[in-house]
Image 1 (tube, rainbow, N blue to C red):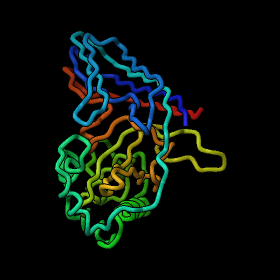
Image 2: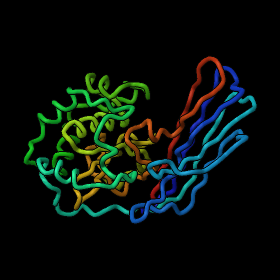
Image 3: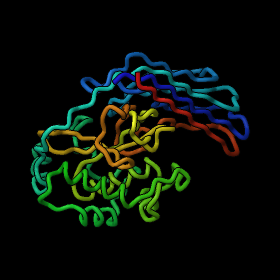
Image 4: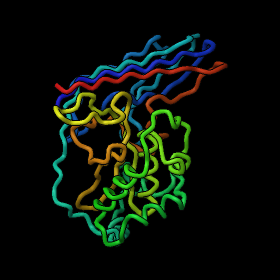
Length: 291
């Protein structure tokens, strides 16, 4: 599926910042066999004094920018064309949960895409017993790994309410879980916590969701902003499988990947520091048009 994507993120500061440095993860990824970035451009206004493109530990594209002069606002604009290929959903040949430790112990590589990096705590994932108890209550050790992932995702979708005003980017996964509501970031962090609690390696994916549904289908929640979903390791034969708990479905052509990491802190779209005082306001607009 071919898409045209536009993204606009603006920040306005209560008082001018006289210096700033940011790491941006905003352009769709180019992933062999999954997604091709046909063309893409990231514009920054005002123009930064420094700009550098690089790859992070997990292979995500990052644009570093820096300002040495005063500015009272900043705008990031992305325009991209992406060819997204959905992996076919084949037979479930993932092993049962009881076999997962054996398969994990057989892996000796420490490269960035190996499941060892996605098993334990990370900056936004605490592995609180409440998550583990919840996941254990809805799964069975004899379940296949894929079925366990889907079951946890489906149950969270049933038990949690999507509420765009319920949380902020600082809200912890445990707080959102206890209140039983949140946005896609909360759904994703909660599901990651649940899966890691029962031994399934899981990570965070940021990206876009198409804004125009197929004829007769309901519009998916989260389509007006950047989206997030879960990536779970389902054994040596299957590898990584992606699941969207906000909408209770396996990820396919409607989901365009920007970056993958352990949790939001690894792949925040805009991350940095400012020399300023007072608060700031921000606005985000996303449009994903299937061609």
